[in-house]
Length: 553
Image 1 (cartoon, rainbow, N blue to C red):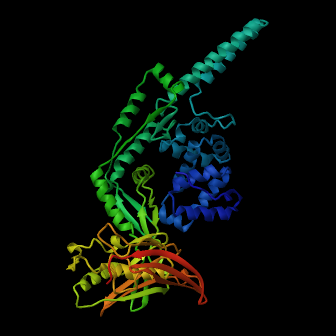
Image 2 (image 1 turned 60 degrees about the vertical axis):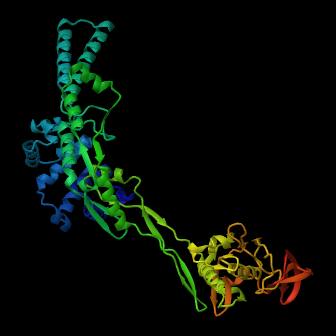
C-alpha cells in the first residue's frame, strides 16, 4: 500500500519526521509505514533511528509489543525487498561483532528473507569485504575464477607468448562459463519465485515467492467474512463481504502456479526469458439478488429525496417554503470498489454521489400584480361547474416562457371530473372562469396565444371581452413572457368569481399600467384594444382582436 508522504518530508527535521510518523501510525500498519519510509528516505541510518525512536512513543506501545530483534528484522527484510542491499550492507558492517552475531543468528533462526541472501552467508562466514552482493548463487563466478587460475598457471609454466587467437578463445570460454552459470543461477532462483512479467489481478508479482502469493490468496479466501466499512460525510455503515453478495474463487490461480512450478528446463527458460507476460486473474463474482438486497438497504440509509419548494396564498398572505436538495448514491463502480477493498486488507470505501438540486424559483413572488372579478348566481346549477373549475385552477403556477392552457388545467369538462349538466351541455359555466382569467392576463399585457368569443353575448363581462372554451377543440391560452413565475389564485364564493395573479412586483415596469377596452363596430360586433399608460398618461393603444356574435344576451 502506497502512502502519499508530505512533499516536504525530506526537508523536515528529525523531530518533525518523528511526529509525522506518529500521525501515520494512527492510520496505517507498521510494516506499511516502514516500507514507505524506506522508499522516501535514502538515509538508512536515519530510518533505523526514526523507527527506534518511534518504538518509544506511547501510541506505538499501545498498538505493538515488538521486541528490538523483531523490529530490527522488519526493517532489514524491508530493505531486502526494496533492493537496498548496498545500504543495508554498509549499515551492518558498522555493527560490532557481538551485535552483528545476534542479528545474523536471529534471522537464520526465523528463516527470514535476509537469512537466504549471500550477504547473510557472507557475514556468517566473517567475509566482511566490500564486494557487491548479488541475489543469486555465485557458483558460476567461482568456476570462472578457478578457470582463470588454471589458465594463468599453464601460461606461466609453459611461458607461451599468447597470440590474439588464444586471448579470444579464453574470453569466449570465460563468457560461456559466465553465461551458463548465470542462467543456472537464474533458473535456480525461479524454482521458488514467480516468473518475470507475471501479473495477478493486474498487479506485477514477479520475484515474489510462491509462499507469499499463496498466503495472499489465502487472505482473499478468508476475507469474505471480514467487515467492510462504507463511509460518507457523517456516517459509517458496516457489512461483511458476504453480505454484499461477493464470492471468490482462487482455485484456477493456484492451479496455474503449481503448473508453472513443475515446468521442465526448456519451458522454464522460455517462460523466464521470452514470454511477453502472464496474467493470472482471481474469479470474483456477485450473487445479484444478494447484491441488490445490500444495495437497496445501503441506498435507504444514505440517499435523501429532494424536497420541492411550495407556495400558497392564504388570506392574502404568501406562505413560501424553500425546497431542499437531495442526494443520489453513485453505484456505477461500487462492485469494483468492494473487490479492491478485499484486495487491499479491507480498506474502507468512501461513498460518493450526486447532489440532486432543487430549483427554487418561486421565492421571487412577493405581491399581487393583477386581479379581475366577475359575478354569477349562486342558485344556478352552473355555479357547481364554476367552483369545480376554480378548485382545479387555484394554485396553478405558470413559469417564464410557459404557455398556460385552460383545458389542460381544468378539463376535461365531464362528469368524471365533477362537472354537471346545465343549459345545453355538461360543464356550462367554465367559460366564465376562462373569461375571468383572460381579463386578468390582459391587465399584465401577457401575449394571448388562443382566444375565441362566444356565439352569444354573455352578461358577466363587457362585450368583446369574453373567452369561450369547449371540450378540447376550443381552448384559451396565454404565454408568460416575463422572467418571473406567475401564481394563479382563484376563488368562487357568494356569487363572486375572483382571479388574482401573484408574481414579482417588477413584472410590470414602474409607472406602466395596462387597461383593455372594447369598441362596438356593428350591431353584434366589437373590437378589443389594450391601452398602455405611463404615469396615468395614455401613450399607446394596441389592437387585440374582433368579436362577432350571432345573437345578443
